[in-house]
Length: 130
View 1: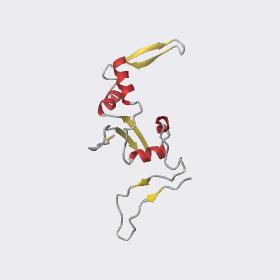
View 2: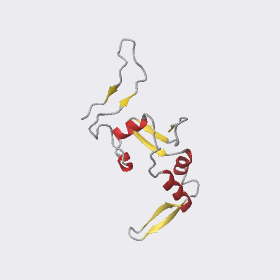
View 3: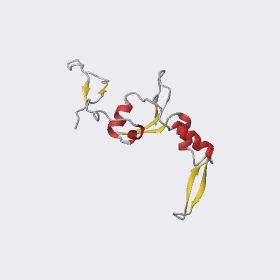
View 4: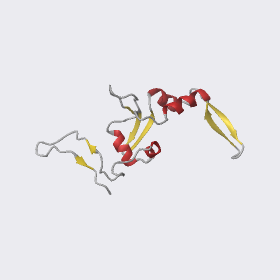
């Protein structure tokens, strides 16, 4: 788990990164901890589902309101660098109205380099549109 932070970021998301699988586990540390520790904090209740004839767990109203507020769309939700990789590899951001790089026909976003050998040109590279 990683917390993305910076002085100019309004939200400090917690990311789960495993290879190219990058997921937002919480838009702040509070949401992440509530989600991860829900079984130990007694913040969920068992509700019987008549249609499926089984019990399902639901969050208590107070905690559900926190999640609803934290996970709703906000234009200020930005994750520098990681957002680009998430848009390329995951389709989940399309629910927020975001497009992956190249989807609008304008090419892909640039990837920042972290190391450039002395004998290599220091020029930004672009993903190829498939």
